[in-house]
Amino acid sequence: MLEYSEPVAKLIDEFKRLPGIGNKSAQRMAFHILRLPEEKVNNLVGALQEVKEKIVFCSVCNNLTDTDPCMFCSSTTRDRTQICVVEEPYNLVAIEKTRSYKGLYHILHGSLSPIRGIGPDELMLANLFPRLSPENNDDTEVKEVIIATNPTTEGEATANYIARLLKPLGVRTTRIAMGMPVGSDLEFVDEVTMDKALANRHEI
Image (cartoon, rainbow, N blue to C red; front, side):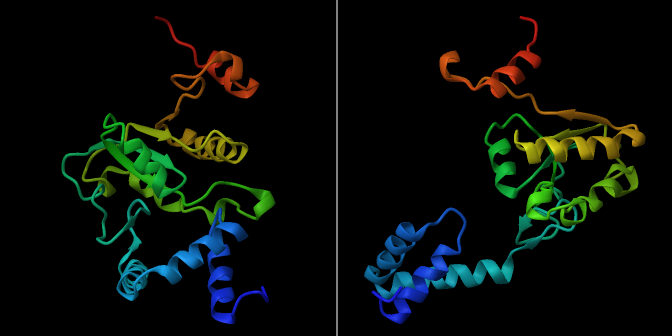
């Protein structure tokens, strides 16, 4: 990137390392930073340092948190008979927005993907199974594990793998329903989504 001075080029290169950021976006972000007052830049630097220093994995569910255990695992009002398994912490946020799920969570931090070299050992899955024992769950028996991985090839493979591991343990294992999104038009729905919608139909 010879057209920019070395510090600017270095900043652009660092932004390009972020997921979903290409060359054009990295350039825009770099020049936005250059136009900011020094105080706002220091605030940004401070926020980055603080998140790296204070945020840890919850020892129970693997959520990102500044307290261990996290607010969900330490809550006395959550339904401890249900555990919802998600791929990433931001999936948890999406579920919480519905305000209908009151159980606990387990975050895998990824999904099975042989192409990307992600196997079972790379997922944060091992600490799920001890949680199924009442002695590790405030003397409460887990009655259902809800698998809410993404409706992708990797997500489906992950869901099937976890279900196979849970089946011998006798705990009820469910998968979130998939199909037609609310407000969509049948004309524009792809065949995979339509197939899932038909398979997950229910009586009215």
